[in-house]
Length: 310
Image: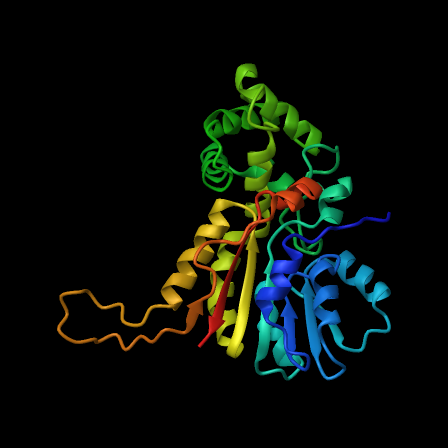
């Protein structure tokens, strides 16, 4: 099937990367190469773009599309394991990195991937089809308390307790196999009056399950420290998030990495010897323009933060 993907905050991301023509860059979330294709346009023959994705379908699609592009190096890997990719390529540091943490349109639009609450498909949600854990495993095997915690924390869903309760009741009768099965359970759990406003009733629960399936938040925490370590001085780290949990992690991580001493204020001298590693380029997150939000609804929740290696 032919899927398209419209990269969010495209112009802003390229501008903030501050690309050098002969530089070496990493796109840790290749997708369908929306950002990568623009990075390549800004590179000379001496420049290199290393593009990583854990989705083999993304790698194969981009490999075919850019078969003649010598500046592009593709690697099948989880974005948090980019250091292993760089090590194999004998690249010690790069001039900039970009991570777009959103689910790509081809993943969302393909019912077989199980990300969409609007299309029926297997309850999968794996970004890397080779991993074992699926959303179906979580829904049918996690305890009611575990499901409530995930849906509440990762989905920020007010009805998490009822949804978890209804999931457990349903699976006692029959395994929950498809996205449509789960949507029906969620609709039954949330009162009709509440479902009339606030968007699709399954949106938050599906977000929570996707985060848990792919271990997204823990990977993000580990990613930022590692990414800064692999940047050259002056190199920039650009991260695009799509919900408040991710944005909060990036915000606090950047803030901590930009601090010098972290000793208590009443200490007479610094004993931590901490030095700032980055300067924060975006004091508040960059968001899509009104025009972009209208053209690409998936950009509405996007927030971009940028830090520069000192």
